[in-house]
Structures are given as structure tokens and as C-alpha cells.
Image 1 (cartoon, rainbow, N blue to C red):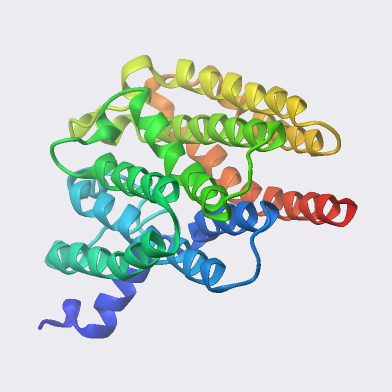
Image 2 (image 1 turned 30 degrees about the horizontal axis):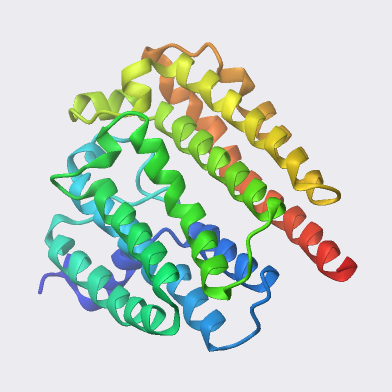
Length: 294
């Protein structure tokens, strides 16, 4: 084993490819949905939260980094919190680690849940693998790429609701639809900054097909739609719709960005990463308030 592939170096690469900054984006929806739907602080919550915190992200981003290696080599934003350029010598290890860390959690959750939650989990895992794996490569199918990416984050919340066994009311449906629209908007905008490296690597995306400016405008429309859908959730849950406004303001400056300068949208994406932390905090306060009122 060379210096570049020693055990500590391999662990650092695996940790980096799992995107620690994004762990909360999948674990939080699951835990919040499960608890709000009536689930308790129990084994199901712990197993599900740990799974969606680390193994799930290693599977999602690890598979992506292995099969997007050529594009990542051309992408100047890779190499930090937004994703590493995974050493090609660790590709096999990454795939094995992602699969083996996912398997015991997936089996446990399938045993814990029922048929409905099991189907949800399998659909979510299929979306995670199908997004990047050869053959399907849903990330290269415009519109399907944003739909699938949004499933990666909304799926854990749907699974949490399914595991709880609670009836799904209008507030939950409106929240999930709004979350899904938000996820599509976020993925589409994120694709804008990668127009040039994706085209150079022959990778298609919603942004490479319809262009940078149109994609930003589509993202704005989706964020606005997400905020409006939350109005159906009733008071005070509808207040969460206001959380779409900072995202609209953040990407507004890029509404006319041309393809040749699409990398300028990276400034907006950096803001997006920090906006998620602020939004998550505010959403948590709202959820606490809703819980105390019930």
C-alpha cells in the first residue's frame, strides 16, 4: 500500500467523499418526520438516524465520486467541503465500503418496518444508486436528474413517516411536496456552476440542456412554488414557506448568467450551503413550537 493509499489516507478519502457537511441534510428529515408523526426516541429512531447520517451519504456521494471521476478532475470547485476528487486507487474500496455499511442498516430497517416502509426504502436506495451508476445514470437525464436528486433528501422523510405508521394529513403532504420542489430547485441551481466541466466530460444535466440562465429561472420558480405550497399546510406550519425567500434572493443575481460564465453561480452555491444551516435552525424552532402547541 503506497503513501497515498495508507489506511489513514483511505479513511480521510472515504470521510471526504461522504460530504460531512451534508450529513444533516438526510438524517434530519428522517428524524424530524419520524418524531413529528408520533414515533418515539427508540431503536428505530437511532438506527434510522445513524443510517441516514453516514452510510447513506457514503453510498450516495461515494458512488457519484467513483463514476464522475473524469468530470471531477476538470471541476475547479472539487477538493473541499463540496466534494473531493476521489483517488482512483480507492474506487473499489469506496464502492465496497458504501455497500457493506449500507447493508446491515437496510436489512434492520426492513425488518423493523412493514411492507409500505420497505417499498419506500427500496425506492430511495434505488434512486441513490441509479443517479450515478452506469446503465441508468439518471443524473444525465435532464429533469429526471433533479427529480431523482430531490428524492435523495425527501425520501428519508417519507420513510420516517412510513415507519411511524401514522395517517398522513394535509400538513404532511403539503410539507413533503414543498420539500420536493425545494430539492428540485436546489439541484437545478447546483448544476448551473458545473455546465462547463460537465460538457467537457460529456455529462448531460438539466443545466447543460436548457442553459444556465433558464435553469436559474426555473430554480427560482420552483423555490417560489415551494413557498406557496406551504400555505396549504395551515397555520402556523405555513410560516415555513417564508424560508424559501432567502434562496430566491440568493440566486436572483444569476438569473441572466450566460453559459460561458456559469461558474459564477458558484458564489450562490456557497451561500446555499450556509443558508441550509440557518434554515435548518429556523425550521427546528418552528417544529419545536408546533410540538409544544400540540
